[in-house]
Length: 211
Ligand SMILES: [Ca+2]
Ligand SMILES: [Ca+2]
Picture 1 (cartoon, helix red, strand yellow):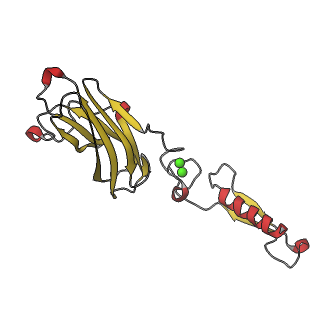
Picture 2 (picture 1 turned 60 degrees about the horizontal axis):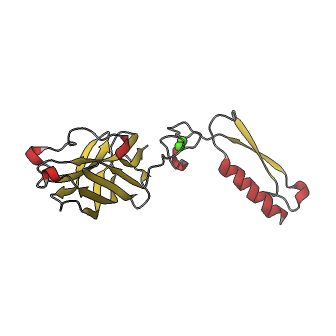
Picture 3 (picture 1 turned 90 degrees about the horizontal axis):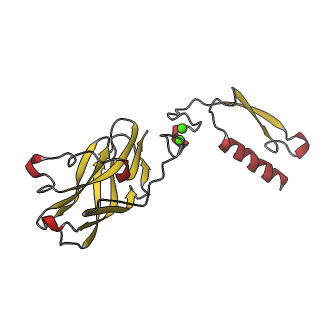
């Protein structure tokens, strides 16, 4: 029993070992119970050199075991993000590649994210206006509209959609954001960028880390 416990401890120490450089060069692990027939001659001392590894964000965790290789930890993104008054929109239930609203994606990888959108147009001055909910990356640009129609007046519409995309090729942190638009259509007059201006951080519904 003692041998099992000590071995488990050794494994734990091994897992927690982080070659950050903070602990200097060599680290010593004492593996009791690793060899020998009885506890008295079990003790061996193994010296382990810190393995070289890529640690892009310098937090002491190698990239291949770092759950968020773009900083200490993934940012916390609100599960529902809303904007607007006369034309109100909301994005919720965001799942990137089957996970939550933050994800590590490899450069240039194909991925998809799903979301639930809601929209209410209570602007009585323009009952014939078309509305759009645009989504895209900042930095990176608009991807598409998840809503593009003239909604019934002052009713909350809701729908779900999945957006497929190619991850950026350059390492970095990219925000998924939405913009409310009132163009004639999503691509009126060949427009492919954001309506009026790139949306700010208050319209972030997801974050991608490209290591
Ligand atoms: Ca790291
Ligand atoms: Ca990290």
